[in-house]
Length: 369
Image 1 (cartoon, rainbow, N blue to C red):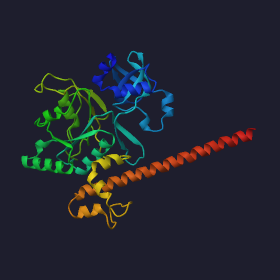
Image 2 (image 1 turned 90 degrees about the vertical axis):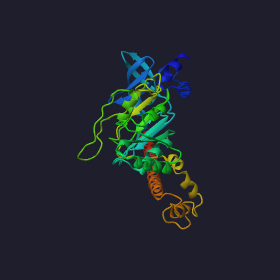
Image 3 (image 1 turned 180 degrees about the horizontal axis):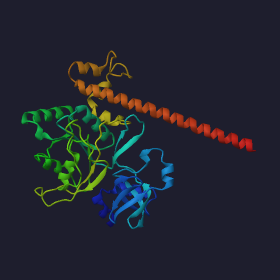
Image 4 (image 1 turned 60 degrees about the vertical axis):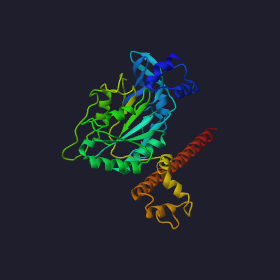
């Protein structure tokens, strides 16, 4: 199909085409969300770029933020001309990366329909294995393959670099690790080799770790604004203030500046906190050794914190499980359980509210008769 061929460079596939037909949206064009702004979405397809807006009915029918379009989503749109369009539907998401807002119950969609998440930390004050684990959990739970990127390695000695690399590989067995520096351009070729045409890559990490600088290197020019880390605080500044998608142009050889293989990348604002929500699947995948040990515990509802006969605690004490990894596992499990408990309570309140409204309507009808 000609349209499929034209859309593949934007990440379109048979999955979305089948979903579009099944949803009864075959009569509409499709476009991918490349940016979100107040009042609308920037959407691109083979016909160009559009500013697309959702209808009042869609806004009214949305139950949560997850029901609104996000960067990376494929939308069924009605093209109105002059770069304007109306959203007629959101196609099902193949993968999704999401997190819980700090001190809120609402969920934020970070990016949709992503193939690989580059989780970026710098070697200086940002470096934290537990934070890596959080990012990896939300990526894997959403069906996204994580790759660790340790940036700014020009600040370390060769011995320190080897130690960090070994530490990451031991803690995150089976996860790809790329060591990079935009200053010395070390590791950039390896990073570029991860990117394939038509696939989507999302860069995740705190402010100031160098996400935007890395993307600029992939693009081959300084398209994204970057800022230096604050000298007084040592913290990164929010140079990227919104999510945006960039389409990389394939070059003829790896030696050319900006070679990317023609992939698609999403830059994200820095996140100081990575709140996990309903990511139980991602945690089980990431901590599979601990999960396997938990099945051998004496009690089915073992919390792995103080119970006698706990196989997990026994392995930690014997040095078979890293103590920091174990502590992070327990902390993440508590967060997920707290979120799930609150979600159940919200659903119970919603059902009770619905019954109350239904009862009030029935009473009014009886009074009118």
